[in-house]
Amino acid sequence: MIVPGEFAEWRSRVDGEEGRSWVAALPELIRQLCVDWGLTLDDTPPEHGGSGLVVMAHRRHQACALKLSWPTGTTAAEARALRTWDGAGAVRLLGARPDIGGLLMERLNQRRSLRGLGLWEAAEVAGTLLRRLAVPAPPGLRSLGEIADDMVERLPSRQRTLGDPIPPAWLDTARGLAADLGAEDHGTLIHADLHYGNVLAGEREPWLAVDPRPVRGRPEFSVPELLWTRADDDAIGSDADLRRLLAMLVETGELEPRAAHGWAVARCVDYWLWGLENGLTTDPVRCHRVLGALLG
Image (cartoon, rainbow, N blue to C red; front, side, top):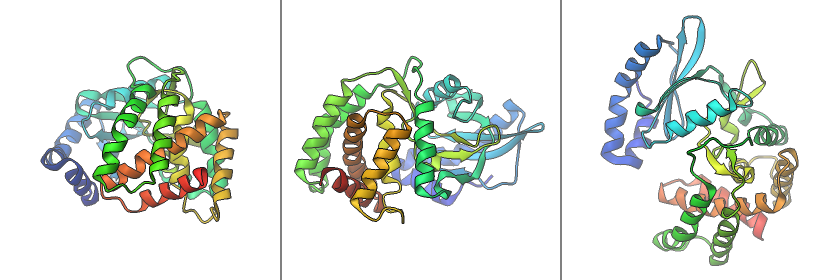
C-alpha cells in the first residue's frame, strides 16, 4: 500500500520527524490490523483527511473501512462516541485498536458526501443529523469548558504572534463568548468536526456522520464548521445568506440561537488563527467572511 503523497507531506509539515516516522510505519500497521481482523485490502486508493488515513477492505463478504489516525490519543474517544451512537446517524463501528490508532467501520460511499448537494439541502440534512447525534455523552470525553478555557487563555498570545490579523474587538468578543458558553456543560455528546465532507451516503440510512472528534457539552458547538466550510459557496451571495444559513441550522437542529451564534463567533476566531498557524490560505478568509456577517 502506498501512502498518498499529500497526506504524508501534511503530517510531516505539521509534526516534523514524528510525523514522517508515523507515515513510514503505516503500511506495517495496516498489514498487522488486516491479520488481526481477517481483512483483505481492496484495490481502491486510500482516502484521507488531515489526521487519518482510510483504506478499503473486505472481511469475508462484508465491505469495511479501516482507519489509521495520527496517535494523539483521540482514537479511544472516537470509538466511545461511535459505540454510543451505535449506527444511529453515524457510521457503525466494527472494531477498535486505540493503542495503534486503528478503527474498523462499515463501508460508506466515500464518493458521495454532503459537499455534493446544494447548500440548503445539505444544511437541512446536517442540521437534522446534528440533533440526532446530541445524546448523553459517555464518560471520559473532553469538555467544552476545557476547550473554552484554552481559547480564553491562549487567543491573545496567538493573535500577537501572528501580527494581530483579527480585529481586536472581534477577538475580545470571541473570548467573552467562549468564557460564558464554556461554563454551560449540558453533558451532551457532540460531533466536533461536523462539516459537509464528514457526512457520507450510506445504505441503511441515506446519510451518516464520520470522524466525530467527540467532546462533551452542548450541540451548538458543532454549528461553525457548517458555516465556514461553505462560506464561499455560490449560494452565499451576501451576509444575509450566511445569517440565513445559521438560522436554518438552528431550526433544523432544534438549537438555542444565542449559543449557536456565540460558538460560531468564538470558533471562527480560533480557527482563523489555527489556519494561519498551519499555513492555510482559504479557511482564514472564510472565517473572516462569517465573522463579518455575524458581527458586522
